[in-house]
Image (cartoon, rainbow, N blue to C red):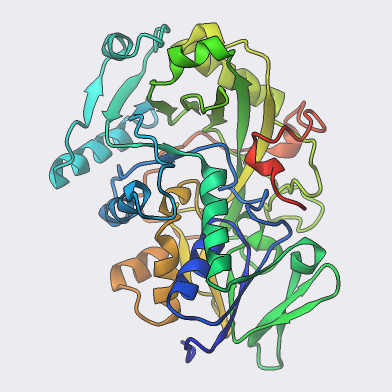
Length: 435
């Protein structure tokens, strides 16, 4: 562990959820020289967190994540926090079928153990009675309702925290000058910084990789980190329809897809729970890395997955199943095989630290995860979290349960996604970045 102090220079590679939160919390602790580099200005359009909305919840079978979720929830709800007014408590219906009913029951049992109120199974008829906007049959579904959950407009939240970090003195560098192409090392293998696309060398006392789905392009991580995409569709309601759907809960079918309530613009996000990989990329063959919006701004959701999402909608709100697309995109995140984050030193390399790998559930911890990365740097991280987030060389515990067990498919083997949709309008957070 390095000797680190408020005078140490810190370089954070990646301005998504983990990088932004880390920058903010380091600056809050008095660190005077914190720099974030990213290909895009905040909110970085390649970040999994640069999204229309994300689920905010504390329901986990793992008590460490449940505890972390409760800590983050306090910040989301705090009227004096930088996120004030963003959280919408819609409730969350977790749904499963043959592959995921055990996960649902594990989550329910932990909720009961820690005294979370209102978590209960609901039949299709009970769901339709409570929320008449649902008119489908929910065929073969098992539904677990959690009332103390909801969503936030994710792109807005990420931008707020980045701006707050800037006010505390964090330096953001974006464009080619922020696009890390390789890391720099001295003769004894100590990481000294990063080299960017414009030829700039950024050096620092401490280097943190918060590079998400693109981590495998900067370090050897084939066994540990796989870039996965959750394809997103956006449909738009007519103004007179918003009131009908505005109070529905999030429906999260772990084997199919997620539907969110409409936002203030009448936009409904639909997100596949069936992951896509990108092993056959042009940059690092054999390692799945992000399919960047910087390189492929007009690519969208594969046709096969659109059909699956529409089938999901047909089972719950059939009248919306055939709505024309307002937009679609691929949302990439770094995934560990055990679905835990990686907040640790990078093995066999001095002065290089990992603070990333959201594993498709990291966004909700945006307000607090940077505290834990800062604790790791300072040697203060609790042992339970050290063990949870250490580098595991691809190993998975025998009792591991994946809440999204549908087998991943390779992007190149799917169809209809290339140059499918324009980049979207200004309501969509991934269009905000100046670069």
